[in-house]
Amino acid sequence: MNNVLTAATATPSRSLIGKKLRDLRKGRSLSQGELGRILGLSQSAISEIELGQSSLSAEQFIHVLKFFNVPASHFDPTPGDTGGAIQKALAAHGANHLAEDPNLLPSENLARVDSIIREALVSGENPRALTALAPVVIRNIGQINLAKLFVQFKDYHLENRYGWLLDNILSAIDLALGAAPSRKQALALTKAATVLRSHRDRVFGGGRSQEAPFEDYLGLPFASPKTKQEVLRKRSAISEAWNILTTIQVTDFAAAIQESHVPDAH
Image 1 (tube, rainbow, N blue to C red):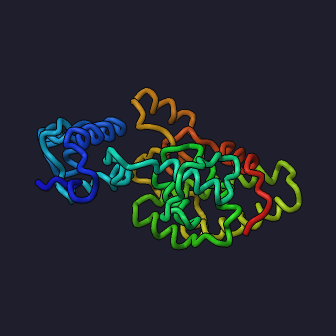
Image 2: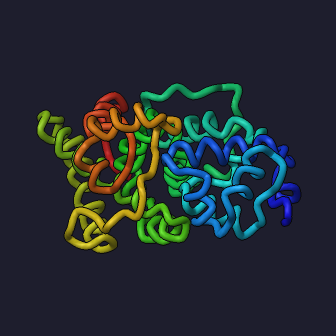
Image 3: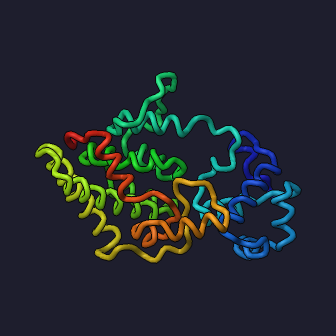
């Protein structure tokens, strides 16, 4: 088998890749045999990979990324401060409640607001960065290529994350409008809601969601079975509809809108 990461990244060790794969598998409550059947491998082969005694082929590695909805950087031991770069970019594009690190250089990959949304949602690790997408989207609604974003998330097999984000922002806008905002803010919120709702209905249909094939994790590390059951009981109706396992609520998005003092939309 080919060692799939030696050429593309900083050559993480087999043992690290194996540990990451084991954590992903346990997070989904899968046995080694069940994961093996998904990847077309035997239980013993999965055991060897998790112990760092063997490697995934390139095809199997891609299958792992798609099945667990994680980027390739999940397996990279030296990815750099991606989270800090995302937070800095979010703050620069309207999430005024986030503090920027003055020592962190902006990333060229995060120069456009579309890229910020994509990177924050694909990373999916920082709840505060995820909820900060609400004021960023509202402030920049006229600059975002929503159709292109949808196609990209569909290509990543992450369209459920995208639908989850749209529904949370729309519900958060409803909460913000119900709090009697200023006329200027109400106009910005209404404009964003109109654009987002039209786009959401066009790409996902009038219904709440499509059937999500498996649970996706956002804003929290891969949970133990006990923690997972607790999150399942407490997750929002939107998260349940999109089959997202997260503690993030609509009120968290609404708080981000309020804290960032969204004055207008571009």
